[in-house]
Length: 207
Image (cartoon, rainbow, N blue to C red):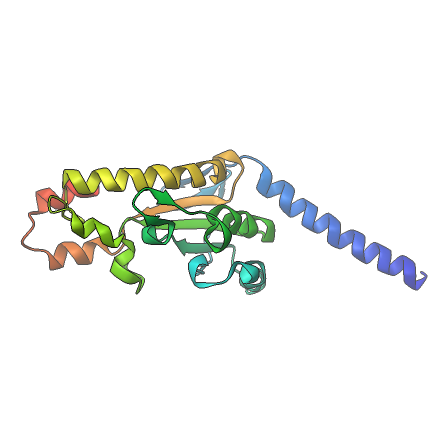
């Protein structure tokens, strides 16, 4: 076969491979837990996940880093979402540029990775104030990480903003997001805050 034809078929195979990945990921899917196992589109699924926090990587490098994760054999990327990274001032939200969460998720999908989101509201992650906006402390009626009306109202606004970004990208809408983890290291917090009753901890955790 002539060299040019071999190159042509090689490039054609690459294009068809990329197209097949995008086609699979663009279809609506279903992710669930059955009998203690993860099930993706009716078949057993083992999550091989790695962490990549988009706020810690310039957006120009997202695709390259995600491609390296895929090349390592991973099928999923997990990322924190930092509340105070996106709400730059009270009521002022930024999801553009390096803060474009949608772009990060879509890039992961393009590469062929599923996504697990860890939005807190508390995240730890060696991030300032665990991801909380600093001005929450100015409200004397607000107590963070408790079943507290003022705090829960602020959290509700955060989750509402986040939902606008994430819901269209969930797997049941054709996106790559298969799971969302609420809170982080909550068991450790319960053990540390013995001054808060277990009943109140439970009430907060189900809000």
